[in-house]
Length: 175
Image (cartoon, rainbow, N blue to C red; front, top):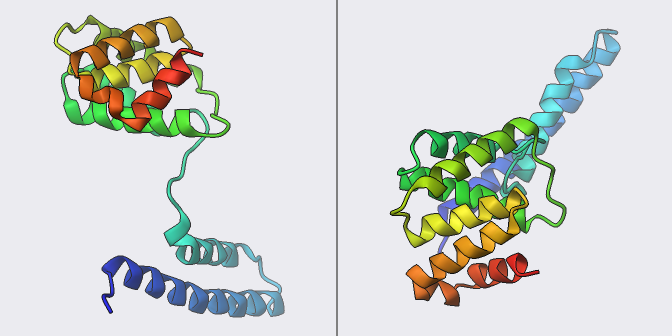
């Protein structure tokens, strides 16, 4: 039997989370007996929930974009940085894949529009950067531009047309 480190970490966090839960209950009991504010126990309970649910937590997003804003600023500063463009693409994937995408705040929209303008101005974009650009255009509601950019990406790299994510994106753009 092979034990992966990820499983061990999950089990250890869960066991320690349960132990911390009982400690938090004891602290709560002591605070109630002493008629003191219960605020210190709240943090312990929150930390317990995080520890027990750690393996199921995939991401934490805040209203207004979160990572999109950060990576859009990075692309706005240096549109040639492939890592930042890829990170923005991943954030846009999460936003587009969500069952009910959150509305982007005005600041995030402005940063994303700036990143789109900077990327659009470049003539030597890779096919992957063009896919990210089309996702950003789609998030901003520019479906015609997104369709044209995505088609140019597929033209530049025909292997992209076989990628299931790109097919889904093509269907979404053409709706």
